[in-house]
Length: 62
Image (cartoon, rainbow, N blue to C red; front, side, top):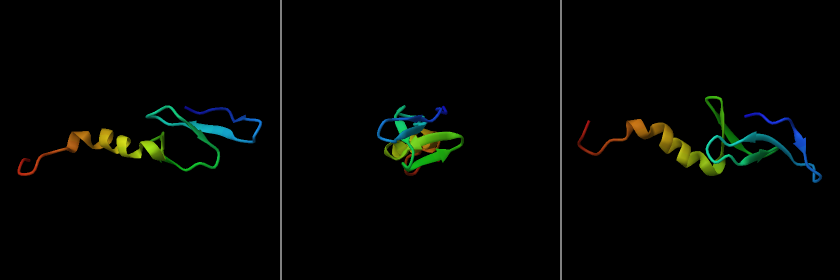
């Protein structure tokens, strides 16, 4: 989801929304842009678990 640049009184601007948690990503913040989705740094681990879930296996099984 793209936001029109809403500039707050303190000069901050929301530029993206995290696809997982829905949190706001502000101008200047680091985030991941993966397959067209914005993912905040706090959600990267959960995003990876979601994406790689079909590939999970147990030792000794294929």
